[in-house]
Structures are given as structure tokens and as C-alpha cells.
Length: 243
Ligand code: NDP
Image (cartoon, rainbow, N blue to C red; front, side, top):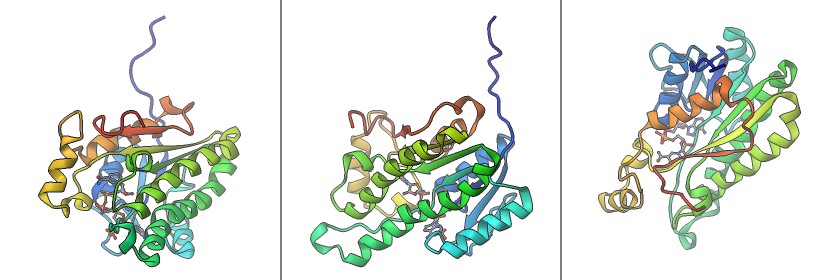
């Protein structure tokens, strides 16, 4: 029998960190359009129109706990987490201060750890969970000037794969979506020459959009991705091929 080609999406409670702008906002809007109950974190800018917002700084464990508690009170246990909050602080190794390295790892990697740990409580009880980490193409390729950032994003792969081994038997999956060069505030600040060089290295010949990333996250949050875990899904126009 030919299966029905319609995608199945069971509505879930979702939390997207850093969902007030950029990739996080596009992801949140897409997941809401898919029919999920979506909450986003922000750091004081307020919730975007039509989305439930909670204030949260992922570098602060109490703030992460309070955000989850607020979402649980509104929607019930969080079933899908999109760990998207992240920062850059680029400079060459010789100029990079300890504090610059630590600050980026603290937000991008330790923050993701805190969020996953808090999320796992409800997921273990429910015997269902989807942990989706927003990594980066540079986790594999590295970039000059991003020792801190690339290290933090590479760490997310080890995290997702360890979580897959720890939590997989409880029907909790953990995957990384690895964007390439995406048009957001994060890349808007790069000078024209750097932007042109980056685009020249992309086989598809263009920057990605936040919506390109949102499509991949939508798939991983949906029913059809239930047997995918520990994967790194590139959304990079071919930029990272071979790594
Ligand atoms: P933006 O700079 O546009 O947005 C970053 C988001 O993260 C904001 O919502 C910001 O909140 C939030 N954030 C930063 N630090 C914290 C923190 N300590 N606690 C809570 N929230 C925080 O970036 P993008 O949308 O481009 O990036 C989103 C994710 O995608 C990041 O993890 C980034 O590394 C990754 N990525 C981006 C790529 C790109 O080309 N743009 C490529 C590959 C990966 P606030 O508004 O308060 O600052």
C-alpha cells in the first residue's frame, strides 16, 4: 500500500532559547505554524508577537530553571527543546583573553548543558523528548579567529551524542543542526570582504536564511524524525561538505 504522503506532526510543547530574534525566532514561528505550543526565551526584549515568552539567561542555572517552570505552568512539560542561544566574540588566538574564551563557551556550550539537563527531568518522566542543538559548520572545519566559538560548537556534537547514549532508551533524541552562513544580526556585522569570501565558499552561491534553518528544525521536531539521534544535520548550502 502506498503510504499517505502527508507529514505527521503531533503537537508538542516546545521551548526555543534565544527565540526573540534571528534563527531562534524563525524556528519558533515555524514550529508554531506546524501546530506546536511554542515558548521562547528572551533576555529582556519581551516576547515576539503571538509567542509565549519567558526571560532567561542560559549562563544562569536559576534563570534556566525559572524559565522551564514558567513554561510548564503555561503549557505543561517541555517535550522539545531547541537550544539556540549563542554568541560570538571573534579574535585571533594570540589576542584572545581567557575571559573571551570562557564567555563564549559558557553561553554556547555550558548554557546548552543547563538547558538539556533541566529539560531531561520532564522528558524522562514522559519517556519522550527531542533535544535539538543549534551548532555550526565551523565545529568541523574550524575558523581562524573563532577558537572559542568553534570549540563551543564542536562540544555540542559530543554533548548530543553522549545524551543519545544516556537517554536514547527513554525515547529521547538529541541532534545538532549545523547552519553555515546565515543572514542574521550575528553575520550582519561582518565586513563586506569577509561576507563575500564566505559566500564564495558556498556551493549553492548564497547565504542561508533563518527560515532555511527553521525547516530542518521542524523536521527534527516532527514525528518522522523519531529514529534519528546523535546526527549532525548541515544547513549550509554545501559549505561544510567533506568534514
Ligand atoms: P543572533 O545574534 O541574531 O541571536 C542570538 C540569540 O541568542 C538572541 O536571541 C540572544 O538574545 C540569544 N542569547 C545570546 N546569549 C544568550 C544568553 N546568555 N542567554 C539567553 N539567550 C542568549 O544570532 P543567530 O540567530 O544568527 O544565531 C542563533 C544560533 O545559531 C546561535 O547559536 C549561533 O551560534 C548559531 N549559528 C548562527 C549562524 C549564522 O550564520 N548566523 C551560523 C551557525 C550557527 P538577545 O536578543 O537578548 O541578545
